Image (cartoon, rainbow, N blue to C red):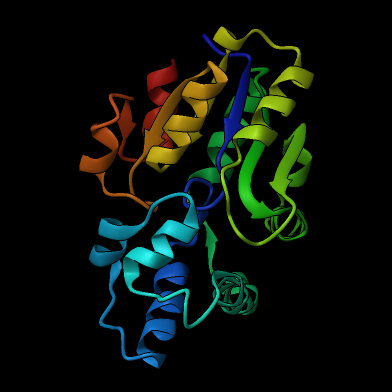
Amino acid sequence: MRYDHIIWDWNGTLFDDTDLCVGIMSAMLDKRDLGPFDVDRYHDLFTFPVRDYYQRVGFDFDREPFEDLAIEFIDGYSEGWRDHSLRADALPVSDALRHRGVTQSILSASEQGLLDEATTHFGLTDRMTALVGIDDHHAVSKLDHGLTFLDELHVPVDRVLFIGDTVHDHEVATAMGVDSALVEGGHARRSTLEATGAPVYPSLTALLAALG
C-alpha cells in the first residue's frame, strides 16, 4: 500500500445520502413554488459553500435568511437520515484497509454531533482514529479543521489519501497537500469529478482494487 492513512469524506462517500438531500430540497422548493427539482438539477447546482448552492437553486436571502433555511434543511435531514444507509461496499472496503494496516479517519462538513451519532449508528466509529466535523449546520468548508487534524496526525502527507465525492473534496485535499481520489454516485456526476484531474472510480471497491 502506498498510503498509511485514509481520510474519508462522509456525505455521499461513505454515507449514501444523495437521495435524502434531493428529497428535502425538493420539498423546500415546492413549498415556495420554486420547483421542480431532481437529482440532475442537484448535480448541476450543488456546490460549496452550501450558502452559494442555496442561492443557485433560487432562494432569496432578503426574504429568508440562509440560517433559517439551513435549519429547515437540517431538521428534515435529522428526521430522515436513519432511513438511508452506507454505500454497500463502505464497510467491506474499510475493513480491508484496516486489515492491511491502514488507519482511517473521517473529515466532514457535517455538524460534529450529527456525525458522531451517524457513524455510531452505522458501526463505523471503532474503525476510525478520528471523526472531524464542524461546529454548526451551515456546511462551510472543512479545510481549516482538516489542516488542524493533519498536523496532529503525524503521518507524512505523501502517505495520506483523501477519498471524496465532490470537487470540494479534491480542493480540500489539494490545499492540505495530500492526494485525492473521487468516487461517483454521490453528490456530483462523473464528468464534473473528472474535470478536477483527480482519479475517479465507479465504486469504493474499484478504488480499493486500484490501490493494490
